[in-house]
Length: 85
Image 1: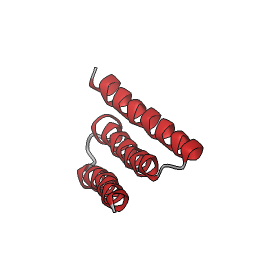
Image 2: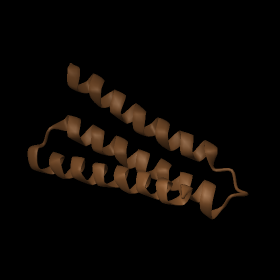
Image 3: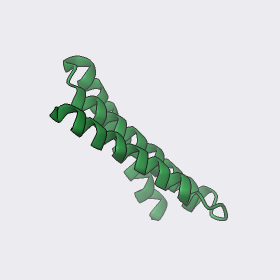
Image 4: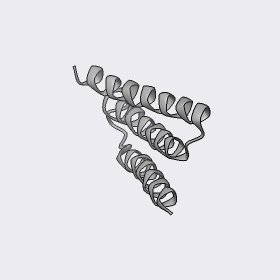
C-alpha cells in the first residue's frame, strides 16, 4: 500500500511540473517557470523516496531526498523574490 501512495505522490508532482512548465512555454510568466522547476525537484525527491523505501530498503537515500526537496524549495523562494522586484 505504501508503494502505491509513494508512486502516486511522485506521479502527481510530475504532472504538476509538466503542466506548470507547459504553461510557462505558452505565457512566458516566470513564476510558472520557478514553480515548475520546484515541482520537478520535488518529483526527484519523491522518486528517491520510492527508491529508498521500496526498491532499496537497506540503502539510506535520505540525504539525497532532502537535498532535492531543498533545491526545489530554494528555486521557488528565489523565483518569488525575483518576481517581487
